[in-house]
Length: 277
Image (cartoon, rainbow, N blue to C red; front, side, top):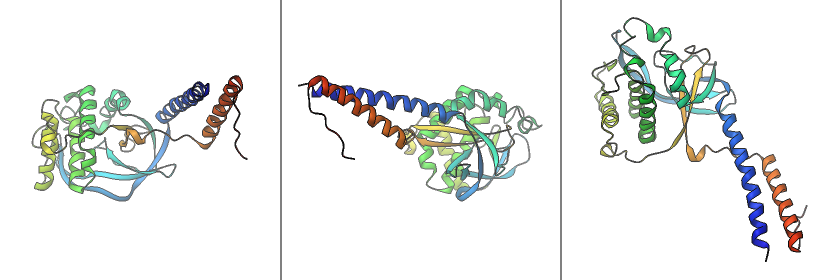
């Protein structure tokens, strides 16, 4: 019988079209422009007293919050730019985390907010490297992002860990020393911060109940111009980030598959099955 080769050919065509679509979707997902409005909805942030460099300690809203883009899509973000306020309605360009760390991160820390007296050389990208920042941010998110979203305290501690990775020493992360220090009195928050930081220092995530790993796709929203508004990042589970084919693409796949089956059926002298209109 020729039925199996016929079906195989149809599947090959469908697979080729699907792969082409995914490649196109990947290209379109990288470089795009949008605006961000926020915070919107209910946040997971709370005020904590932090000290950046040798500047006076200040109260900072710390944790995840929700924003809305120009398409109306609403999602959670964490801040990658602690020394810049969010300007609601500001313009943004999107990029991957790896691209941001390679270029945008270095350029961000070269802006005036990070070069002011008391900050430069203290809370600074010269205390680490882009490779370390990329690896440690990915490690933190892979193990602890899901955990961070269950309470305000954990979310605030996760945000602190992000900022610690970006501008503190690559040797040992600490809430008590270095370019970023906790200057408050919230012992529950500090305990959670230390759990995340100790796991980053030792790699012992299982010891704090976070041994499982989640694979994420990272999208950085970088303000345009840089530091004109706060740079933030959203994540999506890798398995849920595959774009769904449009109805037009599905129709095209169906037509190609049907055409392939008709040709194969003719060659095999098999009856051609048509769809009822």
